[in-house]
Amino acid sequence: MLPEARIFMSDFGESFMPSTTARHYSNTPVLSAPPEVRFAPQTPLLFLADIWSLACTAWSIFDAKPPFEGFAPTDDWMTREHVTVLGKLPPQWWEKDARLQWFNEDGTRNYDRLGTPWAERFESFVQKARSRNGMELVGQEERSALLAILRAMLAFRPEKRLTAEEALNSRWMKEWAVPEFERMKKMESED
Image (cartoon, rainbow, N blue to C red; front, side, top):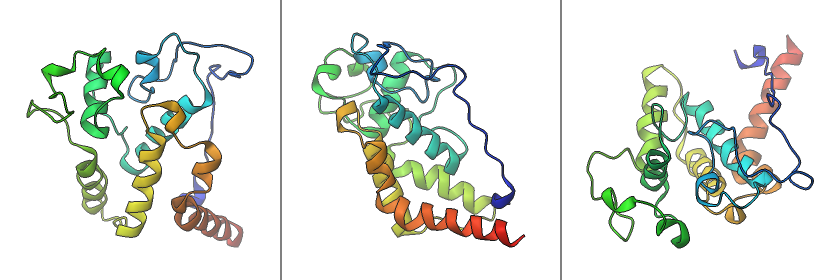
Protein backbone atom coordinates (compact mmCIF):
# COMPACT_ATOMS: atom_id res chain seq x y z
CA MET A 1 0.00 0.00 0.00
CA LEU A 2 1.19 3.52 -0.72
CA PRO A 3 0.99 4.66 2.91
CA GLU A 4 3.41 1.84 3.79
CA ALA A 5 5.94 2.82 1.13
CA ARG A 6 9.21 4.29 2.31
CA ILE A 7 10.98 6.47 -0.21
CA PHE A 8 14.72 6.97 -0.10
CA MET A 9 16.48 9.50 -2.25
CA SER A 10 20.14 9.78 -3.08
CA ASP A 11 22.14 11.89 -5.46
CA PHE A 12 24.91 9.25 -5.71
CA GLY A 13 27.43 12.06 -5.33
CA GLU A 14 26.25 13.74 -8.52
CA SER A 15 24.57 16.90 -7.23
CA PHE A 16 26.21 20.26 -7.78
CA MET A 17 25.36 23.95 -7.60
CA PRO A 18 25.25 25.48 -11.09
CA SER A 19 25.92 28.91 -9.56
CA THR A 20 29.33 27.75 -8.29
CA THR A 21 30.21 24.78 -10.51
CA ALA A 22 30.10 24.76 -14.30
CA ARG A 23 29.31 21.21 -15.38
CA HIS A 24 29.07 20.38 -19.06
CA TYR A 25 28.21 16.71 -18.74
CA SER A 26 25.53 14.65 -17.08
CA ASN A 27 25.78 11.26 -15.47
CA THR A 28 22.01 10.90 -15.65
CA PRO A 29 21.11 7.67 -17.46
CA VAL A 30 20.78 8.41 -21.16
CA LEU A 31 17.06 7.54 -21.22
CA SER A 32 16.41 10.41 -18.78
CA ALA A 33 19.14 12.85 -19.80
CA PRO A 34 18.03 16.16 -21.32
CA PRO A 35 18.84 16.90 -24.97
CA GLU A 36 21.08 19.87 -24.19
CA VAL A 37 23.67 17.36 -22.96
CA ARG A 38 24.07 16.31 -26.59
CA PHE A 39 23.24 19.46 -28.51
CA ALA A 40 24.77 22.17 -26.29
CA PRO A 41 27.80 20.49 -24.65
CA GLN A 42 29.61 23.84 -24.40
CA THR A 43 26.80 25.31 -22.25
CA PRO A 44 26.92 24.53 -18.51
CA LEU A 45 23.97 22.54 -17.24
CA LEU A 46 21.36 24.32 -15.14
CA PHE A 47 18.75 23.15 -12.65
CA LEU A 48 16.40 23.00 -15.64
CA ALA A 49 18.25 19.88 -16.78
CA ASP A 50 16.91 18.26 -13.61
CA ILE A 51 13.37 19.28 -14.58
CA TRP A 52 13.68 17.11 -17.72
CA SER A 53 14.94 14.18 -15.65
CA LEU A 54 12.21 14.74 -13.06
CA ALA A 55 9.56 14.52 -15.78
CA CYS A 56 11.09 11.24 -16.96
CA THR A 57 11.04 9.96 -13.38
CA ALA A 58 7.42 11.03 -12.87
CA TRP A 59 6.42 9.25 -16.09
CA SER A 60 8.27 6.16 -14.85
CA ILE A 61 6.21 6.17 -11.66
CA PHE A 62 3.04 5.95 -13.74
CA ASP A 63 4.42 3.57 -16.34
CA ALA A 64 7.21 1.66 -14.55
CA LYS A 65 9.58 2.65 -17.37
CA PRO A 66 10.91 5.91 -18.83
CA PRO A 67 8.96 7.86 -21.45
CA PHE A 68 11.72 7.19 -23.98
CA GLU A 69 12.60 3.66 -25.02
CA GLY A 70 15.88 1.99 -25.83
CA PHE A 71 18.18 -0.82 -24.86
CA ALA A 72 21.70 0.61 -24.60
CA PRO A 73 20.63 3.59 -26.75
CA THR A 74 23.06 5.78 -28.66
CA ASP A 75 22.81 9.57 -28.95
CA ASP A 76 21.20 9.16 -32.37
CA TRP A 77 18.69 6.69 -30.96
CA MET A 78 17.74 9.09 -28.17
CA THR A 79 17.31 11.95 -30.62
CA ARG A 80 15.07 9.71 -32.69
CA GLU A 81 13.03 8.90 -29.58
CA HIS A 82 12.81 12.56 -28.53
CA VAL A 83 11.57 13.65 -31.97
CA THR A 84 9.17 10.70 -32.23
CA VAL A 85 7.65 11.50 -28.85
CA LEU A 86 7.91 15.28 -28.61
CA GLY A 87 8.22 16.57 -32.18
CA LYS A 88 10.76 18.51 -34.18
CA LEU A 89 13.92 19.73 -32.48
CA PRO A 90 14.69 23.46 -32.22
CA PRO A 91 16.18 24.71 -35.53
CA GLN A 92 19.80 24.95 -34.35
CA TRP A 93 19.70 21.34 -33.11
CA TRP A 94 17.63 20.05 -36.03
CA GLU A 95 20.35 21.10 -38.47
CA LYS A 96 23.08 19.29 -36.48
CA ASP A 97 21.41 15.92 -36.40
CA ALA A 98 21.37 13.05 -38.88
CA ARG A 99 17.61 13.05 -38.64
CA LEU A 100 16.68 12.79 -42.29
CA GLN A 101 17.08 9.05 -42.20
CA TRP A 102 14.00 8.91 -39.94
CA PHE A 103 12.14 12.22 -40.37
CA ASN A 104 11.09 14.59 -43.09
CA GLU A 105 12.24 18.19 -42.92
CA ASP A 106 8.96 19.21 -41.21
CA GLY A 107 9.50 16.67 -38.40
CA THR A 108 7.01 14.08 -39.63
CA ARG A 109 8.13 10.46 -39.66
CA ASN A 110 9.40 8.86 -42.85
CA TYR A 111 10.21 5.53 -41.26
CA ASP A 112 7.32 3.40 -40.04
CA ARG A 113 9.29 1.42 -37.44
CA LEU A 114 9.78 4.35 -35.08
CA GLY A 115 8.40 4.29 -31.55
CA THR A 116 5.02 5.51 -30.39
CA PRO A 117 4.29 9.28 -30.55
CA TRP A 118 3.44 11.24 -27.38
CA ALA A 119 -0.29 11.28 -28.08
CA GLU A 120 -0.40 7.48 -28.04
CA ARG A 121 2.18 6.61 -25.37
CA PHE A 122 0.07 7.31 -22.32
CA GLU A 123 -2.79 5.21 -23.64
CA SER A 124 -0.53 2.40 -24.85
CA PHE A 125 1.88 2.28 -21.95
CA VAL A 126 0.10 3.59 -18.85
CA GLN A 127 -3.62 3.00 -19.29
CA LYS A 128 -3.33 -0.49 -20.82
CA ALA A 129 -0.90 -1.58 -18.09
CA ARG A 130 -3.21 -0.23 -15.38
CA SER A 131 -6.16 -2.00 -16.96
CA ARG A 132 -4.25 -5.29 -17.25
CA ASN A 133 -3.31 -5.09 -13.59
CA GLY A 134 -6.81 -4.29 -12.36
CA MET A 135 -5.89 -0.71 -11.43
CA GLU A 136 -8.14 2.28 -11.83
CA LEU A 137 -7.52 4.14 -15.07
CA VAL A 138 -6.34 7.75 -14.95
CA GLY A 139 -9.40 9.89 -15.70
CA GLN A 140 -9.51 12.21 -18.69
CA GLU A 141 -9.21 15.43 -16.65
CA GLU A 142 -6.23 14.15 -14.65
CA ARG A 143 -4.67 12.71 -17.80
CA SER A 144 -4.87 16.09 -19.54
CA ALA A 145 -3.39 17.92 -16.55
CA LEU A 146 -0.64 15.33 -16.08
CA LEU A 147 0.37 15.30 -19.74
CA ALA A 148 0.36 19.11 -19.78
CA ILE A 149 2.81 19.37 -16.88
CA LEU A 150 5.04 16.58 -18.20
CA ARG A 151 5.09 18.06 -21.70
CA ALA A 152 6.04 21.47 -20.29
CA MET A 153 8.82 19.87 -18.25
CA LEU A 154 10.06 18.08 -21.38
CA ALA A 155 10.49 21.20 -23.50
CA PHE A 156 13.59 20.77 -25.66
CA ARG A 157 15.08 24.17 -24.78
CA PRO A 158 15.87 24.40 -21.05
CA GLU A 159 14.67 28.01 -20.81
CA LYS A 160 11.25 26.90 -22.09
CA ARG A 161 10.78 24.24 -19.36
CA LEU A 162 8.72 24.72 -16.26
CA THR A 163 10.68 25.69 -13.19
CA ALA A 164 10.28 23.60 -10.04
CA GLU A 165 8.01 26.31 -8.60
CA GLU A 166 5.84 26.35 -11.72
CA ALA A 167 5.58 22.56 -11.62
CA LEU A 168 4.54 22.67 -7.95
CA ASN A 169 1.87 25.23 -8.81
CA SER A 170 0.51 23.28 -11.77
CA ARG A 171 -3.07 22.10 -12.00
CA TRP A 172 -2.06 18.44 -11.73
CA MET A 173 -0.11 19.04 -8.52
CA LYS A 174 -2.89 21.10 -6.93
CA GLU A 175 -5.85 18.95 -7.97
CA TRP A 176 -4.42 15.41 -7.91
CA ALA A 177 -0.92 15.00 -6.46
CA VAL A 178 -1.24 17.11 -3.31
CA PRO A 179 -4.75 15.86 -2.40
CA GLU A 180 -3.56 12.25 -2.87
CA PHE A 181 -0.52 12.93 -0.71
CA GLU A 182 -2.74 14.45 2.00
CA ARG A 183 -5.07 11.44 1.80
CA MET A 184 -2.11 9.08 2.21
CA LYS A 185 -0.81 11.05 5.21
CA LYS A 186 -4.24 10.91 6.80
CA MET A 187 -4.46 7.13 6.24
CA GLU A 188 -1.02 6.71 7.78
CA SER A 189 -1.92 8.74 10.87
CA GLU A 190 -5.10 6.70 11.34
CA ASP A 191 -3.12 3.42 11.48
